[in-house]
Image 1 (tube, rainbow, N blue to C red):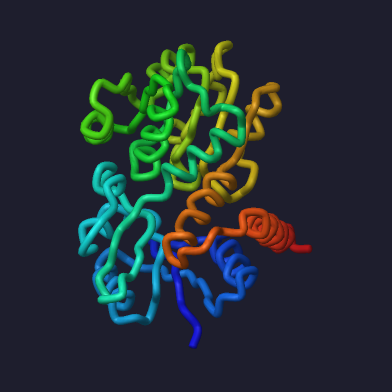
Image 2: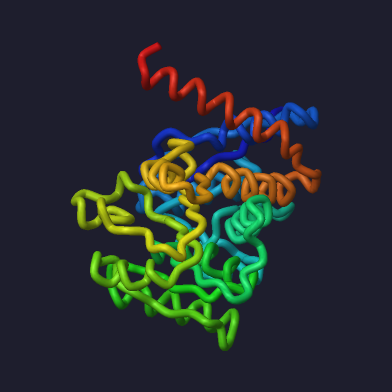
Length: 292
């Protein structure tokens, strides 16, 4: 009998996660699959009951359910509790659910892969204040960066700052608003820019992660957009065109996926196989969108 795993969120658009996890299961000879489960907020408790009942062995959780999933689970890892967000659910032998956060580990792995893991004396600007932004900011602070978080409201940034200060007392953390005049000041002092806001969520030009035409700043040397699809976002294209180090969200996605895989199976994740599967799935998607 196959084991079943899922990605829970709403809405769920195209995701590379099924291709990544199925390739890992097959590489290790595990009889398991991974499916998308679009789940509105009202249906989340029933969806988690399906995990408890054994219809699924584990799940990843994405927007907007990362906090709710943490609150609905019977147990949680220290980092998930500290960040107030969970992206991974593990079904225990007794049927209870344990919530974990692998986003921070995934982003830390991406920083290391880009040669950006040594953050002492450098400032990072993070766009967004959701669950992913909390994990990103935490990983940056752990790496020694000074961090500025830009959010759409002072309430959002205050909650994030309070969360991280509980985890890392005395952290060098400041906040800004996601408005051009405030972003221009923050960008001027940033060495690294990290976007956590899907561009599709922005309805108006001024609400996009980085309004068109706003200069990066001479000090900025690297840009990371954690959005995994498309592989190259408009923000990444712009940074590369200006000669800056730039990366999309694939490496963070792979890092968190590998950590989730290990939590579910207690087996080392086959990283290169997962990467190749992601690239092949992305190529198929791009071809489909191009109508070829």
